[in-house]
Image (cartoon, rainbow, N blue to C red; front, top):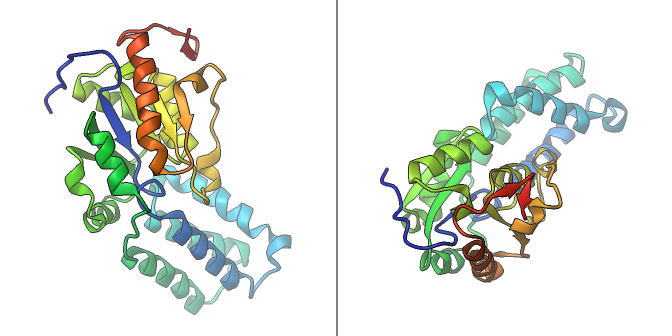
Length: 261
């Protein structure tokens, strides 16, 4: 990977999240969880069994083993169903859980409104990269089916989106964090890690977000380097605003604690 020429100050590279930023994803996970609850609800009282909380705890505990995505979710649902029902769940109902996952993996990609125009507008002034996490096969299929792959000079499918991952990508581009901006819906995965590095971020909330992805510690000083927009129609303007601030700060602006001074 060739480094990006350093010609001027400001944001040079913009990263885009994929799931729930470019296309719908969490809607299908929420529907799968509702179906899971209908299945185990035939065996236990859901509230008494704390079914939702126990499933979330099992999913979190399995992330290091299964990673993110539909397949990990399905394995966690099977484990949770066995545990919640005290091993009384029937094989036919476990098969129904497997079928939920297969349906999700086959579901067509639904690109969100205004995505292509917004990405093209940002790409007119910046290099762009797609950075998404999850199951490799499924994410590759979604990128291919989205019809958006041609917009990105590089596509990164990673197992986790943390500060170390973003730093690796920036090192390969030969860019300091101060010249990078990330766009996404997850505070935990798209926003907080890049802000901790000293980069910039645009938060585009989605109407549904997995509880695990909503948890993020963002210090007030860090929030000075982020913007929040309602949808991608407002993204180009937000990027321009942050670009101007980045240019004024300079490519090597020092960080004080968790933010610029």
